[in-house]
Image (spheres, chains in turn orange, blue):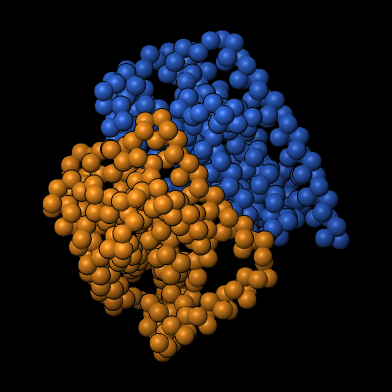
Length: 266
Length: 258
Protein backbone atom coordinates (compact mmCIF):
# COMPACT_ATOMS: atom_id res chain seq x y z
CA UNK A 1 0.00 0.00 0.00
CA UNK A 2 2.92 2.31 0.84
CA UNK A 3 4.43 1.59 -2.57
CA UNK A 4 1.17 2.48 -4.27
CA UNK A 5 0.97 5.75 -2.33
CA UNK A 6 4.55 6.52 -3.28
CA UNK A 7 3.82 5.75 -6.95
CA UNK A 8 0.83 8.10 -7.05
CA UNK A 9 2.84 10.79 -5.25
CA UNK A 10 5.49 10.51 -7.98
CA UNK A 11 2.82 10.60 -10.72
CA UNK A 12 1.40 13.76 -9.13
CA UNK A 13 4.86 15.35 -9.20
CA UNK A 14 5.37 14.18 -12.76
CA UNK A 15 2.15 15.77 -13.99
CA UNK A 16 2.92 19.03 -12.15
CA UNK A 17 6.35 19.18 -13.82
CA UNK A 18 5.02 18.25 -17.28
CA UNK A 19 2.27 20.87 -16.93
CA UNK A 20 5.06 23.41 -17.50
CA UNK A 21 5.42 22.10 -21.08
CA UNK A 22 1.85 21.39 -22.14
CA UNK A 23 2.57 21.39 -25.88
CA UNK A 24 5.35 18.81 -25.56
CA UNK A 25 3.17 16.71 -23.26
CA UNK A 26 0.26 16.50 -25.69
CA UNK A 27 2.48 16.32 -28.79
CA UNK A 28 4.24 13.27 -27.30
CA UNK A 29 0.97 11.51 -26.62
CA UNK A 30 -0.44 12.45 -30.03
CA UNK A 31 2.71 11.19 -31.79
CA UNK A 32 2.23 7.76 -30.22
CA UNK A 33 -1.50 7.83 -30.99
CA UNK A 34 -0.77 8.67 -34.63
CA UNK A 35 2.03 6.09 -34.95
CA UNK A 36 -0.24 3.21 -34.01
CA UNK A 37 -3.20 4.66 -35.90
CA UNK A 38 -0.98 4.39 -38.99
CA UNK A 39 -0.21 0.75 -38.13
CA UNK A 40 -3.92 -0.07 -37.83
CA UNK A 41 -4.45 1.73 -41.14
CA UNK A 42 -1.78 -0.49 -42.74
CA UNK A 43 -3.63 -3.58 -41.43
CA UNK A 44 -6.84 -2.18 -42.84
CA UNK A 45 -5.18 -1.59 -46.22
CA UNK A 46 -3.85 -5.16 -46.22
CA UNK A 47 -7.25 -6.63 -45.45
CA UNK A 48 -8.96 -4.37 -47.99
CA UNK A 49 -6.67 -5.87 -50.59
CA UNK A 50 -6.46 -9.50 -49.39
CA UNK A 51 -9.67 -9.80 -47.26
CA UNK A 52 -7.99 -12.02 -44.63
CA UNK A 53 -4.47 -12.92 -43.52
CA UNK A 54 -4.16 -16.49 -42.34
CA UNK A 55 -7.96 -16.61 -42.12
CA UNK A 56 -8.14 -13.58 -39.79
CA UNK A 57 -10.13 -10.55 -40.97
CA UNK A 58 -9.43 -6.92 -40.01
CA UNK A 59 -11.56 -7.09 -36.88
CA UNK A 60 -9.79 -10.25 -35.71
CA UNK A 61 -6.36 -8.89 -36.60
CA UNK A 62 -7.26 -5.82 -34.54
CA UNK A 63 -7.92 -8.04 -31.51
CA UNK A 64 -4.61 -9.86 -32.14
CA UNK A 65 -2.50 -6.74 -32.64
CA UNK A 66 -4.45 -4.64 -30.14
CA UNK A 67 -3.95 -7.18 -27.35
CA UNK A 68 -0.21 -7.12 -27.89
CA UNK A 69 -0.10 -3.36 -28.13
CA UNK A 70 -2.36 -2.65 -25.15
CA UNK A 71 -0.41 -4.94 -22.83
CA UNK A 72 2.88 -3.47 -24.09
CA UNK A 73 1.61 0.07 -23.55
CA UNK A 74 0.39 -0.63 -20.00
CA UNK A 75 3.69 -2.25 -19.08
CA UNK A 76 5.45 0.64 -20.84
CA UNK A 77 3.71 3.19 -18.60
CA UNK A 78 5.14 1.35 -15.59
CA UNK A 79 8.49 -0.11 -16.61
CA UNK A 80 9.81 1.21 -19.89
CA UNK A 81 11.30 4.63 -19.19
CA UNK A 82 13.57 3.67 -16.32
CA UNK A 83 14.02 -0.10 -16.45
CA UNK A 84 14.42 -0.72 -20.20
CA UNK A 85 17.12 1.96 -20.28
CA UNK A 86 18.76 0.79 -17.06
CA UNK A 87 22.05 0.59 -18.98
CA UNK A 88 22.53 4.36 -18.73
CA UNK A 89 21.96 4.29 -14.93
CA UNK A 90 24.40 1.36 -14.65
CA UNK A 91 27.15 2.86 -16.83
CA UNK A 92 26.84 6.35 -15.37
CA UNK A 93 26.74 5.12 -11.78
CA UNK A 94 23.33 6.70 -11.11
CA UNK A 95 22.07 3.46 -9.63
CA UNK A 96 24.12 4.10 -6.48
CA UNK A 97 21.77 6.89 -5.41
CA UNK A 98 18.77 4.55 -5.63
CA UNK A 99 20.56 1.72 -3.83
CA UNK A 100 21.17 3.97 -0.84
CA UNK A 101 17.46 4.63 -0.35
CA UNK A 102 15.25 2.51 1.93
CA UNK A 103 13.00 1.13 -0.84
CA UNK A 104 13.27 -1.75 -3.31
CA UNK A 105 15.16 -0.88 -6.49
CA UNK A 106 12.39 -1.99 -8.88
CA UNK A 107 9.81 0.05 -6.94
CA UNK A 108 12.02 3.12 -7.12
CA UNK A 109 12.67 2.63 -10.82
CA UNK A 110 8.94 2.27 -11.51
CA UNK A 111 8.24 5.42 -9.50
CA UNK A 112 11.02 7.42 -11.14
CA UNK A 113 9.48 7.34 -14.60
CA UNK A 114 5.91 7.56 -15.84
CA UNK A 115 5.59 6.59 -19.51
CA UNK A 116 2.95 9.17 -20.37
CA UNK A 117 3.51 8.86 -24.13
CA UNK A 118 2.11 5.31 -23.96
CA UNK A 119 -1.27 6.83 -23.07
CA UNK A 120 -1.60 7.77 -26.77
CA UNK A 121 -1.29 4.17 -27.90
CA UNK A 122 -3.57 2.96 -25.10
CA UNK A 123 -6.27 5.37 -26.33
CA UNK A 124 -5.97 4.39 -30.02
CA UNK A 125 -5.87 0.68 -29.14
CA UNK A 126 -8.90 0.87 -26.85
CA UNK A 127 -10.84 2.63 -29.64
CA UNK A 128 -9.95 -0.05 -32.21
CA UNK A 129 -10.52 -2.89 -29.72
CA UNK A 130 -13.96 -1.53 -28.78
CA UNK A 131 -14.87 -1.35 -32.48
CA UNK A 132 -13.62 -4.91 -33.02
CA UNK A 133 -15.57 -6.23 -30.01
CA UNK A 134 -18.68 -4.37 -31.14
CA UNK A 135 -18.39 -5.89 -34.66
CA UNK A 136 -17.96 -9.46 -33.47
CA UNK A 137 -21.09 -10.84 -31.79
CA UNK A 138 -19.23 -14.00 -30.70
CA UNK A 139 -17.25 -11.86 -28.23
CA UNK A 140 -20.35 -10.57 -26.44
CA UNK A 141 -20.17 -12.92 -23.48
CA UNK A 142 -19.14 -12.24 -19.89
CA UNK A 143 -16.92 -15.31 -19.70
CA UNK A 144 -14.96 -14.20 -22.77
CA UNK A 145 -14.62 -10.64 -21.48
CA UNK A 146 -13.50 -11.94 -18.09
CA UNK A 147 -10.98 -14.28 -19.75
CA UNK A 148 -9.75 -11.40 -21.90
CA UNK A 149 -9.17 -9.17 -18.87
CA UNK A 150 -7.18 -11.91 -17.14
CA UNK A 151 -5.22 -12.54 -20.36
CA UNK A 152 -4.46 -8.82 -20.55
CA UNK A 153 -2.94 -8.97 -17.06
CA UNK A 154 -0.85 -11.96 -18.21
CA UNK A 155 0.29 -10.01 -21.28
CA UNK A 156 1.25 -6.99 -19.17
CA UNK A 157 3.30 -9.28 -16.91
CA UNK A 158 5.12 -10.89 -19.87
CA UNK A 159 5.89 -7.49 -21.41
CA UNK A 160 6.91 -6.12 -18.02
CA UNK A 161 9.08 -9.18 -17.37
CA UNK A 162 10.77 -8.78 -20.77
CA UNK A 163 11.54 -5.12 -20.03
CA UNK A 164 12.98 -6.07 -16.62
CA UNK A 165 15.16 -8.80 -18.18
CA UNK A 166 16.46 -6.41 -20.88
CA UNK A 167 17.25 -3.86 -18.16
CA UNK A 168 18.87 -6.54 -15.97
CA UNK A 169 21.11 -7.67 -18.85
CA UNK A 170 22.95 -4.35 -18.50
CA UNK A 171 24.42 -5.70 -15.23
CA UNK A 172 26.32 -8.24 -17.36
CA UNK A 173 26.80 -6.60 -20.78
CA UNK A 174 26.50 -2.86 -19.98
CA UNK A 175 24.74 -2.07 -23.29
CA UNK A 176 21.53 -4.09 -23.32
CA UNK A 177 18.97 -2.08 -25.31
CA UNK A 178 20.22 -3.34 -28.69
CA UNK A 179 19.88 -6.93 -27.48
CA UNK A 180 16.38 -6.06 -26.32
CA UNK A 181 15.72 -4.45 -29.69
CA UNK A 182 16.33 -7.75 -31.48
CA UNK A 183 15.08 -10.40 -29.07
CA UNK A 184 12.14 -8.45 -27.66
CA UNK A 185 10.98 -5.92 -30.24
CA UNK A 186 11.89 -7.62 -33.53
CA UNK A 187 11.00 -11.19 -32.53
CA UNK A 188 7.71 -9.99 -31.05
CA UNK A 189 6.85 -8.60 -34.51
CA UNK A 190 6.16 -12.18 -35.61
CA UNK A 191 3.14 -12.17 -33.31
CA UNK A 192 1.41 -9.18 -34.90
CA UNK A 193 0.20 -11.64 -37.57
CA UNK A 194 -1.43 -15.03 -36.94
CA UNK A 195 1.31 -17.60 -36.35
CA UNK A 196 -0.28 -20.10 -38.74
CA UNK A 197 1.13 -18.12 -41.68
CA UNK A 198 4.75 -18.83 -40.69
CA UNK A 199 6.83 -22.01 -40.83
CA UNK A 200 6.28 -24.14 -37.72
CA UNK A 201 9.69 -23.43 -36.15
CA UNK A 202 8.74 -19.73 -35.80
CA UNK A 203 5.72 -20.70 -33.72
CA UNK A 204 7.90 -22.95 -31.55
CA UNK A 205 10.48 -20.17 -31.09
CA UNK A 206 7.96 -17.55 -29.96
CA UNK A 207 6.23 -20.08 -27.70
CA UNK A 208 9.02 -22.03 -25.99
CA UNK A 209 12.18 -19.93 -26.40
CA UNK A 210 10.66 -16.46 -26.08
CA UNK A 211 7.09 -16.47 -24.71
CA UNK A 212 5.88 -13.60 -26.92
CA UNK A 213 3.04 -15.67 -28.43
CA UNK A 214 1.45 -15.87 -24.96
CA UNK A 215 1.08 -12.08 -24.94
CA UNK A 216 -1.47 -11.92 -27.74
CA UNK A 217 -1.59 -14.87 -30.16
CA UNK A 218 -2.81 -17.68 -27.91
CA UNK A 219 -5.26 -15.48 -25.92
CA UNK A 220 -6.68 -13.95 -29.13
CA UNK A 221 -7.00 -17.41 -30.71
CA UNK A 222 -8.97 -18.67 -27.67
CA UNK A 223 -11.15 -15.57 -27.66
CA UNK A 224 -11.94 -15.72 -31.38
CA UNK A 225 -12.22 -19.52 -31.57
CA UNK A 226 -9.20 -19.69 -33.87
CA UNK A 227 -6.97 -22.06 -31.94
CA UNK A 228 -5.48 -24.54 -34.41
CA UNK A 229 -5.94 -27.49 -32.06
CA UNK A 230 -6.76 -28.43 -28.46
CA UNK A 231 -3.14 -28.00 -27.39
CA UNK A 232 -3.05 -24.39 -28.64
CA UNK A 233 -6.36 -23.77 -26.85
CA UNK A 234 -4.83 -25.03 -23.58
CA UNK A 235 -1.79 -22.81 -24.11
CA UNK A 236 -4.20 -19.90 -24.53
CA UNK A 237 -5.92 -20.72 -21.25
CA UNK A 238 -2.53 -21.00 -19.54
CA UNK A 239 -1.29 -17.65 -20.91
CA UNK A 240 -2.05 -15.65 -17.72
CA UNK A 241 -0.14 -18.22 -15.63
CA UNK A 242 2.78 -18.03 -18.07
CA UNK A 243 2.70 -14.26 -17.49
CA UNK A 244 2.96 -14.66 -13.71
CA UNK A 245 5.78 -17.24 -14.03
CA UNK A 246 7.73 -15.13 -16.53
CA UNK A 247 7.41 -12.02 -14.38
CA UNK A 248 8.68 -13.87 -11.29
CA UNK A 249 11.56 -15.25 -13.37
CA UNK A 250 12.43 -11.73 -14.54
CA UNK A 251 12.55 -10.50 -10.92
CA UNK A 252 14.87 -13.39 -10.08
CA UNK A 253 17.15 -12.53 -13.02
CA UNK A 254 17.14 -8.88 -11.96
CA UNK A 255 18.14 -9.83 -8.40
CA UNK A 256 20.94 -12.05 -9.76
CA UNK A 257 22.17 -9.23 -11.97
CA UNK A 258 22.08 -6.73 -9.14
CA UNK A 259 24.46 -8.95 -7.16
CA UNK A 260 27.00 -8.47 -9.96
CA UNK A 261 26.59 -4.70 -10.00
CA UNK A 262 29.77 -2.76 -9.41
CA UNK A 263 29.40 0.95 -9.01
CA UNK A 264 30.84 2.89 -11.94
CA UNK A 265 31.74 5.71 -9.59
CA UNK A 266 34.65 3.99 -7.81
CA UNK B 1 34.01 20.08 -49.15
CA UNK B 2 36.99 18.80 -47.11
CA UNK B 3 35.09 19.67 -43.95
CA UNK B 4 32.06 17.79 -45.19
CA UNK B 5 34.26 14.74 -45.82
CA UNK B 6 35.77 15.00 -42.33
CA UNK B 7 32.35 15.02 -40.67
CA UNK B 8 31.36 12.07 -42.83
CA UNK B 9 34.46 10.09 -41.75
CA UNK B 10 33.88 10.84 -38.06
CA UNK B 11 30.27 9.64 -38.29
CA UNK B 12 31.42 6.49 -40.08
CA UNK B 13 33.98 5.74 -37.35
CA UNK B 14 31.40 6.36 -34.62
CA UNK B 15 29.21 3.69 -36.15
CA UNK B 16 31.98 1.12 -35.75
CA UNK B 17 32.72 2.08 -32.13
CA UNK B 18 30.20 -0.37 -30.64
CA UNK B 19 30.67 -3.64 -32.51
CA UNK B 20 28.21 -5.68 -30.41
CA UNK B 21 25.56 -3.05 -31.17
CA UNK B 22 26.45 -3.38 -34.84
CA UNK B 23 26.07 -7.16 -34.73
CA UNK B 24 22.63 -7.03 -33.07
CA UNK B 25 21.61 -4.32 -35.49
CA UNK B 26 22.45 -6.60 -38.46
CA UNK B 27 20.61 -9.46 -36.79
CA UNK B 28 17.63 -7.14 -36.30
CA UNK B 29 17.35 -6.17 -39.97
CA UNK B 30 17.79 -9.80 -41.10
CA UNK B 31 14.91 -10.84 -38.85
CA UNK B 32 12.76 -7.89 -39.86
CA UNK B 33 13.15 -8.71 -43.55
CA UNK B 34 12.47 -12.41 -42.80
CA UNK B 35 9.17 -11.48 -41.10
CA UNK B 36 8.06 -9.32 -44.02
CA UNK B 37 9.01 -12.00 -46.56
CA UNK B 38 7.16 -14.66 -44.53
CA UNK B 39 3.98 -12.56 -44.51
CA UNK B 40 4.08 -11.93 -48.27
CA UNK B 41 5.01 -15.58 -48.88
CA UNK B 42 1.75 -16.54 -47.20
CA UNK B 43 -0.32 -13.88 -48.97
CA UNK B 44 1.06 -14.73 -52.44
CA UNK B 45 1.57 -18.46 -51.92
CA UNK B 46 -0.30 -19.18 -55.18
CA UNK B 47 1.29 -16.41 -57.25
CA UNK B 48 5.01 -17.07 -57.71
CA UNK B 49 5.60 -13.99 -59.86
CA UNK B 50 4.03 -11.62 -57.33
CA UNK B 51 5.86 -13.33 -54.49
CA UNK B 52 9.21 -12.86 -56.26
CA UNK B 53 8.38 -9.19 -56.82
CA UNK B 54 7.31 -8.64 -53.20
CA UNK B 55 10.39 -10.43 -51.83
CA UNK B 56 12.64 -8.16 -53.88
CA UNK B 57 10.50 -5.18 -52.81
CA UNK B 58 10.93 -5.97 -49.10
CA UNK B 59 14.73 -6.37 -49.42
CA UNK B 60 15.15 -3.17 -51.44
CA UNK B 61 12.80 -1.29 -49.08
CA UNK B 62 15.03 -2.47 -46.21
CA UNK B 63 18.07 -0.97 -47.98
CA UNK B 64 16.22 2.29 -48.66
CA UNK B 65 15.08 2.39 -45.05
CA UNK B 66 18.72 2.42 -43.94
CA UNK B 67 19.53 4.93 -46.67
CA UNK B 68 16.90 7.44 -45.54
CA UNK B 69 17.14 6.79 -41.82
CA UNK B 70 19.48 9.28 -40.19
CA UNK B 71 19.78 11.46 -37.12
CA UNK B 72 19.81 14.88 -38.77
CA UNK B 73 16.76 16.10 -36.80
CA UNK B 74 18.37 15.14 -33.50
CA UNK B 75 21.70 16.68 -34.50
CA UNK B 76 20.10 20.03 -35.34
CA UNK B 77 17.81 20.02 -32.30
CA UNK B 78 20.63 19.04 -29.94
CA UNK B 79 22.77 21.96 -31.14
CA UNK B 80 19.88 24.37 -30.70
CA UNK B 81 18.68 23.20 -27.30
CA UNK B 82 22.22 23.07 -25.87
CA UNK B 83 23.06 26.52 -27.25
CA UNK B 84 25.94 25.13 -29.32
CA UNK B 85 24.20 26.32 -32.49
CA UNK B 86 25.28 29.87 -31.66
CA UNK B 87 28.87 28.72 -30.98
CA UNK B 88 28.93 26.87 -34.32
CA UNK B 89 28.17 30.15 -36.08
CA UNK B 90 31.60 31.43 -34.99
CA UNK B 91 33.31 28.47 -36.66
CA UNK B 92 34.41 28.85 -40.30
CA UNK B 93 32.08 26.04 -41.41
CA UNK B 94 28.42 26.28 -42.30
CA UNK B 95 26.53 24.34 -39.54
CA UNK B 96 24.43 22.66 -42.24
CA UNK B 97 27.66 21.06 -43.56
CA UNK B 98 28.36 19.49 -40.19
CA UNK B 99 24.75 18.28 -39.79
CA UNK B 100 24.55 16.77 -43.25
CA UNK B 101 28.12 15.43 -43.21
CA UNK B 102 27.47 13.62 -39.93
CA UNK B 103 24.07 12.39 -41.13
CA UNK B 104 25.45 11.11 -44.45
CA UNK B 105 28.34 9.44 -42.61
CA UNK B 106 25.78 7.56 -40.50
CA UNK B 107 23.86 6.66 -43.65
CA UNK B 108 26.98 5.38 -45.43
CA UNK B 109 27.98 3.32 -42.39
CA UNK B 110 24.46 1.87 -42.04
CA UNK B 111 24.47 0.91 -45.72
CA UNK B 112 27.87 -0.73 -45.43
CA UNK B 113 27.33 -2.47 -42.10
CA UNK B 114 23.61 -3.36 -42.12
CA UNK B 115 22.23 -3.26 -45.63
CA UNK B 116 25.16 -4.89 -47.39
CA UNK B 117 25.16 -8.04 -45.19
CA UNK B 118 21.38 -8.16 -45.51
CA UNK B 119 21.53 -7.95 -49.32
CA UNK B 120 24.26 -10.63 -49.39
CA UNK B 121 22.18 -12.97 -47.19
CA UNK B 122 19.03 -12.47 -49.25
CA UNK B 123 20.79 -12.14 -52.63
CA UNK B 124 19.26 -15.39 -53.98
CA UNK B 125 15.87 -13.66 -53.77
CA UNK B 126 17.15 -10.84 -56.01
CA UNK B 127 18.62 -13.04 -58.74
CA UNK B 128 15.42 -13.09 -60.79
CA UNK B 129 15.57 -9.32 -61.37
CA UNK B 130 16.74 -8.20 -64.81
CA UNK B 131 19.69 -6.12 -63.63
CA UNK B 132 21.23 -3.54 -65.93
CA UNK B 133 23.66 -0.68 -65.35
CA UNK B 134 21.08 1.78 -66.69
CA UNK B 135 18.38 0.61 -64.26
CA UNK B 136 20.78 0.66 -61.32
CA UNK B 137 21.94 4.20 -62.19
CA UNK B 138 18.39 5.49 -62.61
CA UNK B 139 17.36 3.90 -59.31
CA UNK B 140 20.42 5.32 -57.52
CA UNK B 141 19.65 8.82 -58.83
CA UNK B 142 16.06 8.50 -57.56
CA UNK B 143 17.30 7.26 -54.16
CA UNK B 144 19.86 10.09 -53.87
CA UNK B 145 17.19 12.67 -54.74
CA UNK B 146 15.01 10.96 -52.11
CA UNK B 147 17.82 11.23 -49.56
CA UNK B 148 18.16 14.96 -50.24
CA UNK B 149 14.37 15.33 -49.85
CA UNK B 150 14.34 13.42 -46.57
CA UNK B 151 17.28 15.41 -45.21
CA UNK B 152 15.67 18.71 -46.13
CA UNK B 153 12.44 17.71 -44.40
CA UNK B 154 14.15 16.42 -41.25
CA UNK B 155 16.53 19.38 -41.02
CA UNK B 156 13.49 21.68 -41.10
CA UNK B 157 11.92 19.65 -38.30
CA UNK B 158 15.17 19.99 -36.32
CA UNK B 159 14.83 23.77 -36.47
CA UNK B 160 11.51 23.42 -34.62
CA UNK B 161 13.74 23.15 -31.53
CA UNK B 162 13.78 26.96 -31.58
CA UNK B 163 10.05 26.83 -30.80
CA UNK B 164 9.49 23.55 -28.91
CA UNK B 165 11.33 21.93 -26.00
CA UNK B 166 10.98 18.43 -27.47
CA UNK B 167 10.93 17.80 -31.20
CA UNK B 168 10.82 13.99 -31.27
CA UNK B 169 6.99 13.95 -31.55
CA UNK B 170 7.17 16.02 -34.75
CA UNK B 171 9.93 13.85 -36.21
CA UNK B 172 7.87 10.79 -35.39
CA UNK B 173 4.72 12.23 -36.98
CA UNK B 174 6.63 12.74 -40.24
CA UNK B 175 8.33 9.34 -39.92
CA UNK B 176 4.96 7.61 -39.60
CA UNK B 177 3.43 9.58 -42.44
CA UNK B 178 6.38 8.49 -44.59
CA UNK B 179 5.87 4.88 -43.42
CA UNK B 180 2.26 5.03 -44.61
CA UNK B 181 2.41 7.11 -47.79
CA UNK B 182 5.80 6.20 -49.24
CA UNK B 183 5.18 2.52 -49.81
CA UNK B 184 7.83 1.58 -47.24
CA UNK B 185 5.62 -1.20 -45.83
CA UNK B 186 3.06 -1.86 -48.57
CA UNK B 187 3.61 -0.90 -52.22
CA UNK B 188 1.53 2.14 -53.16
CA UNK B 189 -0.11 0.12 -55.96
CA UNK B 190 -2.00 -1.84 -53.24
CA UNK B 191 -3.58 1.36 -51.88
CA UNK B 192 -7.14 2.46 -52.72
CA UNK B 193 -7.30 5.22 -55.35
CA UNK B 194 -8.02 8.03 -52.89
CA UNK B 195 -4.93 7.18 -50.84
CA UNK B 196 -2.73 6.98 -53.96
CA UNK B 197 -4.02 10.45 -54.86
CA UNK B 198 -3.20 11.72 -51.33
CA UNK B 199 0.27 10.13 -51.47
CA UNK B 200 0.99 11.77 -54.82
CA UNK B 201 0.40 15.19 -53.25
CA UNK B 202 3.32 14.63 -50.88
CA UNK B 203 7.07 14.28 -51.55
CA UNK B 204 6.99 10.90 -49.77
CA UNK B 205 5.44 9.22 -52.82
CA UNK B 206 8.84 9.09 -54.55
CA UNK B 207 10.92 7.69 -51.70
CA UNK B 208 10.38 3.93 -51.94
CA UNK B 209 8.11 2.78 -54.75
CA UNK B 210 9.77 4.87 -57.47
CA UNK B 211 13.42 3.75 -56.94
CA UNK B 212 12.30 0.14 -56.42
CA UNK B 213 10.11 0.13 -59.53
CA UNK B 214 13.01 1.57 -61.54
CA UNK B 215 14.96 -1.56 -60.64
CA UNK B 216 12.23 -4.15 -60.81
CA UNK B 217 10.05 -2.93 -63.69
CA UNK B 218 10.43 -1.31 -67.10
CA UNK B 219 8.90 2.11 -66.48
CA UNK B 220 8.04 4.37 -69.45
CA UNK B 221 10.52 7.22 -70.05
CA UNK B 222 7.76 9.82 -69.61
CA UNK B 223 6.97 8.52 -66.11
CA UNK B 224 10.65 8.44 -65.11
CA UNK B 225 11.26 12.00 -66.37
CA UNK B 226 8.05 13.28 -64.82
CA UNK B 227 8.89 11.82 -61.42
CA UNK B 228 12.44 13.22 -61.51
CA UNK B 229 11.09 16.68 -62.36
CA UNK B 230 8.54 16.62 -59.53
CA UNK B 231 11.26 15.47 -57.10
CA UNK B 232 13.52 18.34 -58.22
CA UNK B 233 10.67 20.82 -57.76
CA UNK B 234 10.10 19.52 -54.21
CA UNK B 235 13.84 19.77 -53.49
CA UNK B 236 13.97 23.35 -54.81
CA UNK B 237 10.94 24.38 -52.74
CA UNK B 238 12.18 22.77 -49.54
CA UNK B 239 15.72 24.15 -50.06
CA UNK B 240 14.27 27.64 -50.33
CA UNK B 241 12.24 27.10 -47.17
CA UNK B 242 15.30 25.75 -45.32
CA UNK B 243 17.34 28.77 -46.42
CA UNK B 244 14.67 31.11 -45.08
CA UNK B 245 14.41 29.20 -41.80
CA UNK B 246 18.21 29.06 -41.44
CA UNK B 247 18.66 32.82 -41.90
CA UNK B 248 15.82 33.50 -39.53
CA UNK B 249 17.45 31.16 -36.98
CA UNK B 250 20.80 32.91 -37.37
CA UNK B 251 19.14 36.30 -36.92
CA UNK B 252 17.35 35.02 -33.82
CA UNK B 253 20.62 33.73 -32.37
CA UNK B 254 22.36 37.08 -32.82
CA UNK B 255 19.54 38.89 -31.03
CA UNK B 256 19.70 36.38 -28.17
CA UNK B 257 23.52 36.56 -27.95
CA UNK B 258 23.83 40.33 -28.14
